[in-house]
Image (cartoon, rainbow over all chains, first blue to last red; front, side, top):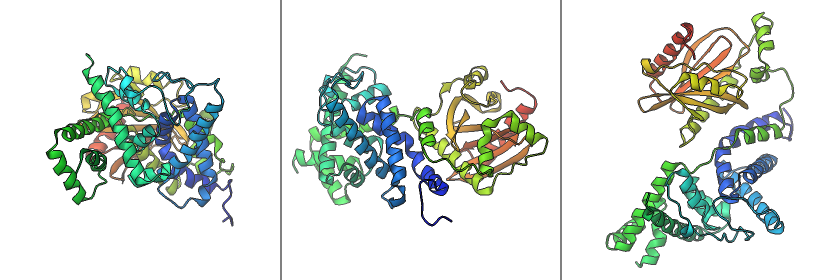
Length: 186
Length: 254
């Protein structure tokens, strides 16, 4: 038995894989919605897992999923910061044409502006992706990732009341887009 | 209660975060307010549509590999797990095994771990949109689809006549390796048949175990490991396995 857990401890690697890898799809989903770019999402998730592994020795809870999400969210915020200072690499996203807007705060296209006709999963993903931050993040954590208000508050580092008001706003925006879409002739 | 207050509490009501007292207050308000009634109805419909459409994404296999590779690799001690990982070592190892030079016996805990990974893979597959990468009831479509995607070619057998409908195939990930999954349906129940290479060519008789409420029938034959996972009752899953094995013997694999 090794006296202290180190990075090349195979037991640590095994425990980490078993605890964290089952959430890979969830982490990727969150990164896709936060970054709205498949390649950036992959990079962010990889970075998240490497950071998580590094800090795994000190992990004592909460549940694995919100713990990973909190790390992932920080990685994504760093990516936002990078994009904001690199105006030559705007995100490429079919959903929205927001140019070099500071993404964490505002995307330019509102869900209301979306003319989404087919209500398949792409249409729904696009409607969610068109929500502005921080409402999108809150909505995805709740509606797609199934986190509790407490967990969302911890991940986003805001009070539970803020989680509720953001959800209310997110759902109201989505509902407008939703109703607009339903009025479209098929 | 005003509509603004109700709108905020409505969120918690939908999300099941409201205590009974407040839930009643909100419901009372909603009952007497057309505006909030419509809002609640739309929100519920939206939630339902999102759940049905499957707004999740599936992580690319490539990303999984990148992360696995970035994690410290277990030292190259010739333990049995490393041998198991040698799914890919293919014919050289198989040949060794055939000459009896290497006896492969999975350690019990490795077996358990793999079984539970297989169950996780089964669960993941049940999420909307994750079940199949190739959708076809034709074994001659599903079988070639795996070519070039795996270092093993999973047998694909049409068991429709026997009551198990072939619905497609999928790449999955178990024990840090890509693995083939052939998907069948029996009534409303999904059966994932995971197939991986094993260095042992010895036939191992089927064993049924239950993990997290799912039944797993595991057997080995002709250098392949099989795990059939489903929420089907054990007798029906056993029936599936037997039909599959007997079709294999009579050589009807596509």
